[in-house]
Length: 242
Ligand code: ZN
Image 1 (cartoon, rainbow, N blue to C red):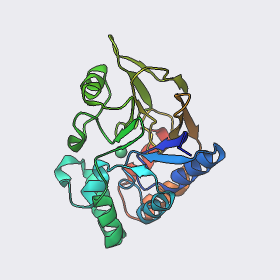
Image 2: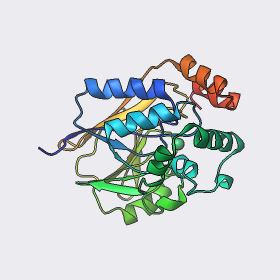
Image 3: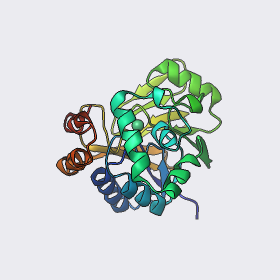
């Protein structure tokens, strides 16, 4: 039986409490497949646990810039000072085998009519943000499927091809026949001023996307960041969702 109902998520960033909350919510939604847009690690202190849980879930998964940086496939100069500290910390926290697994993640993946990429569809290795209609235009020109899911900006938003290109930040979006590139927001470090973990449920048959938010124990994640000696700012930003 083909997968019809997907749990769509990304930008976990080593935040196990958030990933657990999202995983439980996706289970309650009875999804029968998982799509993950990468950045499993970076910023938080639960790198081992998050990699283990993702490997257990066995989603269709692509590499995020933090994943590849930990694996040495992307230079530290692309990151700010806090992110650099977390990448260096994560390299020490993970087993060589997990680091190799992160490095082996592909830049894009496709299942049925769905493409996954971390940043953009038109230039995945550059890990650029897809945030404006112009960014979406560039990606629509390269998109070979009817639907794409991306991450990286940590902002939930869906773009629709057309003249003009339109977008939606609604919680429930009917894609219909439209070609769409959607971002379900970030599990582990939301940046839209809503600190709750963000993900989406996509029904491939009805083509309806539901963007969901779930609360999790932010204090627990911050405690881990502080105990690990990671930059304090990486914890504080979780409370304000920025
Ligand atoms: Zn990210």
